[in-house]
Image (cartoon, rainbow, N blue to C red; front, side, top):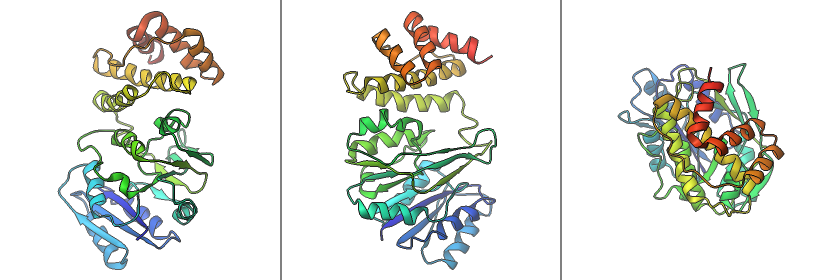
Length: 314
């Protein structure tokens, strides 16, 4: 078995069939589909069983509700493929995606992770857009994280992974924004990460989903994941300009956490070259980040958070 496709299922009776059929319709056949019914109280369990009765490539796991991370972990335990990927059950895959991606992996068996394009927020006319990538290989996970801005698209589902990366690595149960908690752990084990412009994952907008309804606690979990990465990064890394962009990204999350929770900032204050940092942000046409960096340099993180709260969230 070459590929295991893991689909967590919970309260998605309206979208589950579209999701599963999009995977079944792929031209790639050397795969298994693992449906993890996470104690869904609607008809999802019955839909899963019906699919399994009709399609021999489908396995179904029925379990007590434990959340998205727990469902994915259950799927990983049952997976037998050399590679694994994930699909959320309210999303779907463009035709031919896995066939083309697995052809790339067949040509490049040295790839540990292959990331492919996403149609982000499909169904929300004012938000939807296509996230595309260049054909690129990264042998340095820090370069992928910073220069490739992996921190902005750390989604679990638009990637094919070598399954052995998940040995002793599991999604954190009880954590929100679990994807960004686990990706750095996988990158630490990966030797080569590649991006491609082939294939397309449709990430469907859900106004009642975790992203749309993220509160201070949820964003605090996101911030914690980024703080773990920041602690591992060195300012002496060759790509200083990209580090500044990432640091400002984390500071934005910190300001939102402060605004929503009233708690003090926990992001470390760094001594950064004012001219070099400002020049880097302006060179990248990150004007808003440049303004925020000036406020941060003058008044610190607390001053930046106050600036964000008073001027940018009116």
